[in-house]
Length: 443
Image (tube, rainbow, N blue to C red; front, top):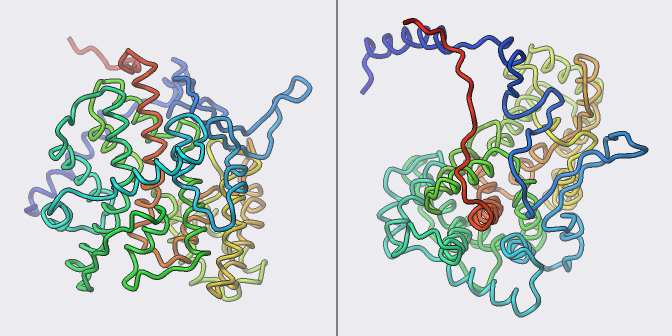
């Protein structure tokens, strides 16, 4: 337990750390060091090769690099084409997961076998829910899941075997188990911390990942076809993103050290939960709550623009000057995931009678780039990213905010798994970046 003298000690030492750990920004320029592994234009420093996915934000036209509408590719397929080619009532998560993991589109028999395998693996060890998930429940579902992932290693007869076949088996098991780890962790928190009812529904092996998520989460197990389809689409869009994101790079780094699947995925989870990565949609939702409290008429563009200006001027919301959900490190003209999301949101808001809320989102999407451009020098376009709508989608689906980042993880475990397998197949060296010391030698 922290005492007042202990707190005062740590606060005093913070100043010491800040003084001795500060490095002049000038030195980064002098030695050509790219902070955050990004150059002055925001492009990621090339650290590897991959066959798994690709992001396109610009194309060479007449010898000049020209911004284009964003594209996201999975194993040679545009993600919007993968989604659009699904039948209206078809759930595509498992099909796209197979594509990312195996590197090829499954035929009918392969897909059916894979779905059956996922359904069979969607189970936890005996008493695991009681002995692990329900112990020390917390609203931080990502931490709870990470604890569970590491504990699952204790139930594996070959936890540290990094052979491709064994690692693939472990990855598929985790892909299957992630929905249970997330939803059961939330129900334990809901019961012990929020003093609500305890609900533990078993998954149905014949249903898709999206359908099982809604079934396990809701007391009455009921959901509409539209709800399942929208959630399935959300999971596909969050499944993978070009290989260069923070948590996927973490996956490659830990895999390169020879570590086991459970430790690797736990490390990726720790990366994803950060508010600059997977937790960004929660920040959007907090901002939207604040805007609703200060904007009386969502259809009044002048009023919306005036409040967005206050946010950018650091006079409103968290006073950091950011309109969350706007802009992306890679995309310039548009984020393809956001474009697809928007179409599904339009269908869901009608079913949920939330058109008025949607109007606010549409006005912010239109006005925010203009407000930002007036206040700052823009090197590339500013457009909504996937986080702008994803939190709203989860809200429309009655998914509690504690599960927002976990939903991201339930999808992204597929991408992590694909990159782990690729790293194991292709690389035989540990990833070891270089840091230049700029310390003063005292003796």
